Image (cartoon, rainbow, N blue to C red; front, side, top):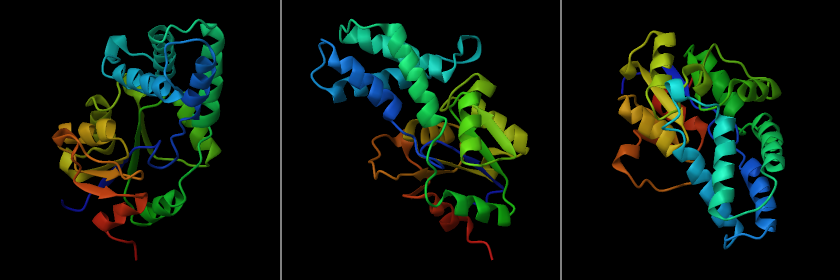
Length: 236
């Protein structure tokens, strides 16, 4: 690709850690009760699949906040495994864990240096994140980060990999799809979403996962965010 004029940057799992604790902790409470679940992994895996399956149908007039999708996934999980617990108490627990772990995430070791180098190169960054605004604002404040351009699922009433968030980012930057590089860790949300928009994409594969679908084949792969500079070069 030609030198990108801007970076579209995912946040959770890319710049900061995407902690699975909120879901795991609630599922641990569920697993204490009688259920059809064979083990804790079966519960948590089902929650995550259900949660992400709710993304595509939540847009426009049917849009719901990400935390609301989390609540629905919780209800479906309890129903699937015939768990008889106080759903309102579990919902409150999920909300508290959500705000604690995703509102105050740990930043990856290389992220600050990468962001500083991009600033030196004068390459604009647009954060593009599937997240509710209040949670993201908390996370940015906690890590003392700021970005000139931010696009969230709440802003667009849509979730990646749908096109609305990418369209909004391009509009804010006043650039076309071949003038930017999208960087993210999710094969579905980031790689598939960028591919659908014909936007070059760098996949941050920290966990060294395999690619199982042609629609999720990235242009570039790196195990850390520093892989950006293999594409755009280092600042002087």
